[in-house]
Image (cartoon, rainbow, N blue to C red; front, side, top):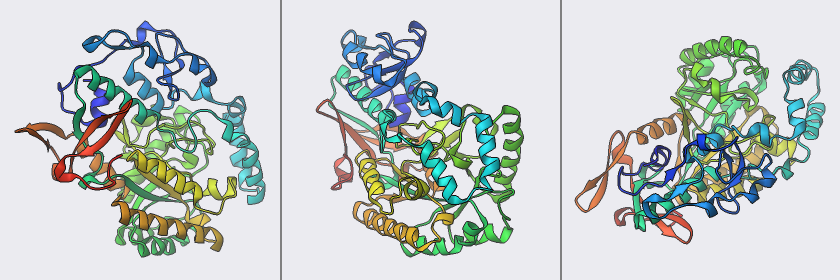
Length: 459
């Protein structure tokens, strides 16, 4: 069984015939191609690739499967393509030309030097100029990209067809058969945001939610032991947010290693497990220097982030030993300041799309931007909507640390036969559920065993 497909679904080993993926060495340089009319991939492919996203429609790998039965072969390496998307290896080829200049080291350094002298209105104007045309970016898909998840579903369907089965068991994604997961996080960027933390906890608590607060440990504001203790004493989490939030964490390998060492020290000092980089800047190939358990710096689709790209999935995934908990909804700053939208309409759209994929609904909001009455009212409307959704659909509201614990436990679970049925073995197996992927049209849908059936849970 392909290890990437196995890890995603936690399938029983050796239950199905395998679909062979060809070795990447058999292909030319990586580029864009399709796996079905609307599913854009990036990697090496035997039938050809395009250097531009727009040209990918000429190369549909789904139409070029070879053989039959056990001999079916994909004209690309499935695991490589999944890694390329999750790790954003396509970024340079998909990036608009202006991004290369604007995100260059010199320009970024100049901007962050001048930033402290620029009024908010001027910064907002410059940011809107940079983001001009964002809605025309063809890849990843806006407002949510599920390419990684669609690829897994289509690959699984091929495996099922090759094995002559129409129903295949796997370990459900979330505990207690929850149909999806909700995670709230707050990045604290300024002294004013720090001082608003208690009021923001009050807003969350009033709706029954807990969240994590990511704090900047150096230069921005003082982080006292009392401040950390107050957050934790109320059942909220504390994580590290960059080092000093100056946009330079990944500017050079030497600087990064020096800062990563200090970040690791703050992780221990705060008793934190998680991290998020400032401005969502990221270089996933350097993560081995970090000592935290999970990261939250990769957006699902980053059209409204200074660093474009996106991981194209609504589920957590491992980067080495670190669990990536992707951001799957738009940041409050982007909605309010870039889009000038003071409603929850975009968030509702994204939530509905994530719910259909049984995925992770993760949010970033900032106490700094919720102090004024207008955005605060919008956030309260969002909390009210989430409260109703969680109660109605039995969504799992989790702290990122709880999600990290669950996903690591699930990665060690095994699905084994129990008479004529199946059972889950491994850590936290008492919270796990057996689900089934069912042949449905050209793809699959999900359902539970009869004892776990519940209206509206899978799709």
